[in-house]
Image (cartoon, one colour):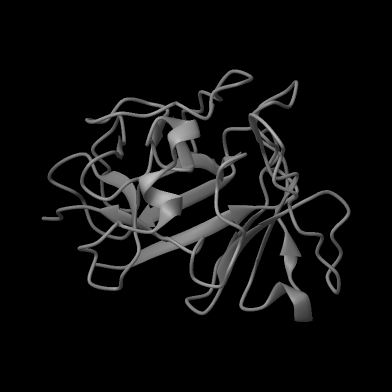
Length: 209
């Protein structure tokens, strides 16, 4: 089985997909970031904020690629084909998308995944599966909020290991795919950012033929 992750630097109507290399990360920043200078997200005094930009690369401070199609959940027009996962073989059940804090995919104890009191202990990372390359259902404005989440597989939902996750609405066939968008929520009571504290491993869990 080969699983390929891609990002859309085009639009929903005319997507331009680029493959995300294994050594790359997805970074979120405040507005005004450039390939050589990213602006940090300022924690609000109350409530919560969303990042303004999304980037991919092994180290975007040394040069990265902005995912132009990505917009924050409070934007007027939402995007659906932001990321895509392609499977080389058919699956026997619908995959799920979630997040962990370790490479063994067994822990989700960092604050980004457990959430805070402000978020009612739902994870800070929210995800919305929009369908597939052929069938795209973009989320509505405001699809993510600080308290969006809960056990099960509602959509949208928080990404929190085996506790909170999103089930893809289709069982993908050989060569098939699903598309999605996601982002973190930054609440007023989150801890100041430190390396590793807000770096979850986004995971797709699947069973293939």
